[in-house]
Image (cartoon, rainbow, N blue to C red):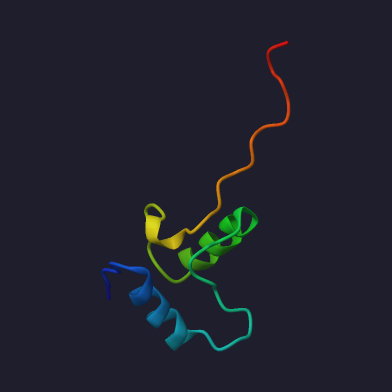
Length: 70
């Protein structure tokens, strides 16, 4: 059965129905270090060709502290 997920709320509703353990998938993804594991977990449940923008609420990456051109 194919379900067209249009927003984070629809996806969260489905996750809430099927997740029973304490390690629930947290949406939106707010930390850079959580991206890989969260997307891998979502791909076990949903068919994702690409990660929709509504999955993310990330802070900008910090400015680089190195100088690549001397």
